[in-house]
Image 1 (cartoon, helix red, strand yellow):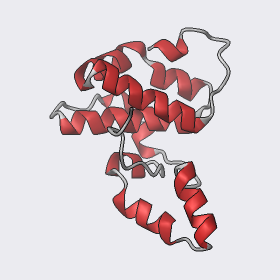
Image 2 (cartoon, rainbow, N blue to C red):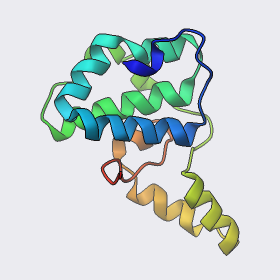
Image 3 (tube, one colour):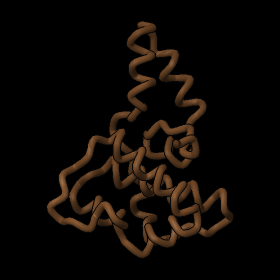
Length: 132
């Protein structure tokens, strides 16, 4: 997978990382993205770097795409599937909306609408297909 080509790569902003992953899915297509992600072993690379949100986001994307395409899950990542982030990660736009409203209602609503594969890791993500 391209993002890991350079071992000296700086850690990107998480929102930028998520956007790039969604664009890659759109550009490559679901099945090619699944194959590329599995062959690259980038999930383990992120784990080694202790980039836990990136590692789990990419695994959630992989699991989600496998589910919607009826592809069996790769059991190589079963150990990671038992993990979750300590704090729930919300999209920046949802956090801003909650701050402006002075209420956690937007956060709770976004959790209810989240894709289950992402929510399993405490990552709120609801629309990975809406990229331009």
